Image (cartoon, rainbow, N blue to C red):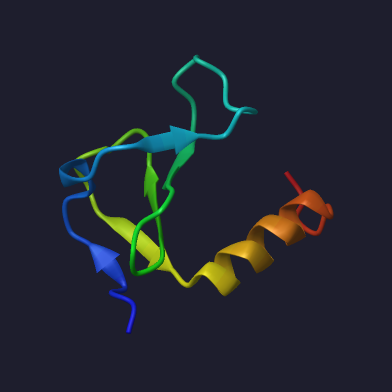
Length: 73
């Protein structure tokens, strides 16, 4: 079973931003690869805040939808 959240995401190391994210400090999400129970995602502006944990299948579906242009900016 996947834990739905991680209360303090700063306790984990190895977060990465999308290569499309700039360095201007805007709204970005960070993802943690190779987490054993899912795909944690956090807000880069609050690194010590919570992270949501998605199943790998759900995360892949989300990323595929983004790449397919299914969301408007």
